Length: 90
Image 1: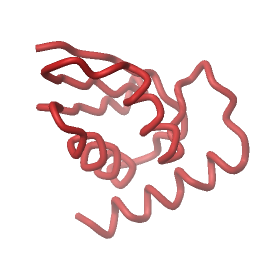
Image 2: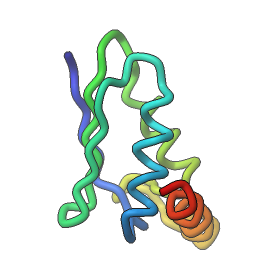
Image 3: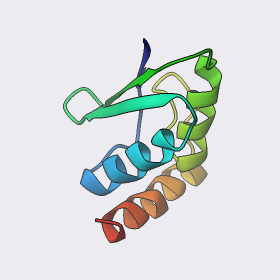
Image 4: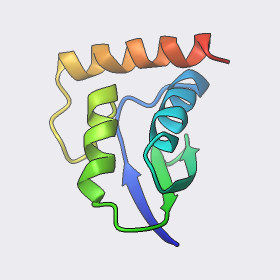
């Protein structure tokens, strides 16, 4: 079992968390995803050989880039859309 931790931006609520968890769990080999609101972090446990960039790209596409990446208006808007989807899927 391997794990990766990401410090992200735009994490606002449980809707964001639901979207992140559901999206990352769809990646083959991912066994667990935990979101920590206090740290703005995502911890991913997985089996096999999955490159860190796969997770980073998925988070970025949802509007949650790593804290070290540029966080422009488009990404912020994507995160709000992802948040709404996560709230509706509760």
